Length: 364
Ligand code: PEP
Ligand code: MN
Image 1 (spheres, rainbow, N blue to C red):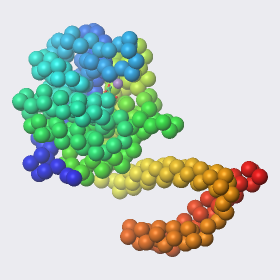
Image 2 (cartoon, rainbow, N blue to C red):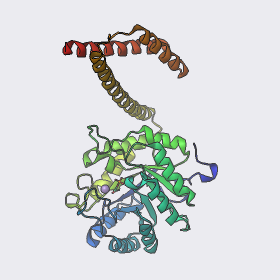
Image 3 (cartoon, rainbow, N blue to C red):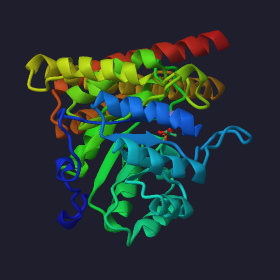
Image 4 (cartoon, rainbow, N blue to C red):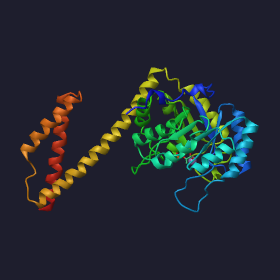
């Protein structure tokens, strides 16, 4: 299902000034005080590389009793800082009341967080609240879980509310698998989003993907090599004392250095970089394949246990032949080389037999 032509998003450079080739959105995870906001924002503005100041005003915390943002006070300070720095302001909204308050304080761009885009009821409430605001730009983060349909659905709900100034934000996906990332990037999902909604600008949020400042450069570079349209980066005047996400925030000076080295390294026309980008995609697919193999192995073990309890033979030649014919037909439909798939299936089959023999011998 693709969005209708009338719902195509506007090109990014139609409504925002991007002079570095990619859009930079930077600012603190949370507004903590007037002083912290002013120190951070004035340095970001002085760097001259970032037209949009992001700032968390209401913070979705996993546990109650933690710092939940400064609310309306923060909006007041943001309006002041915008007057002083001329930066556009961007704020996360999770409730209709947030939208109303952002409009009252002239916030320029709204965004839906990953814990909001995961819930169609909440997205629809926000969509209803922005209906009638004058084409306010809205950024929609991917949902916490790797579900492309939910992300597309959230974007469609917001576009149907009447704004064409849309940005999708790729902030990675939660996973129970051990990973170097706080949220694994699964690059194939934002790329699939681009195919699903042609022309949609995608900004990568390497801060929430990485979860620490050391991985920021690598993640940001990959995003630009994959021709994403910008970066949203968490920046704090004193990251180590930040009330939220202290490990992943960088100083305005570090932001400057990061953008400089990215601008030097990320020329997408370079074929070798394109090759690198494709390799990242293959990495993703390989990880998916391994997870699928692990899932298969679990099933084989369960079957082995049942065969042992039912005193059945491990080897069932008829079933093997049927499976082979069925899988090879499907492989042909998918345009795969059948000899290669036959070899692969043979290996899988041998591993299954070996696993089940092991279970039965152990049980004797
Ligand atoms: C944030 O941007 O500070 C935030 C809470 O992000 P996410 O919704 O991606 O977790
Ligand atoms: Mn954060």
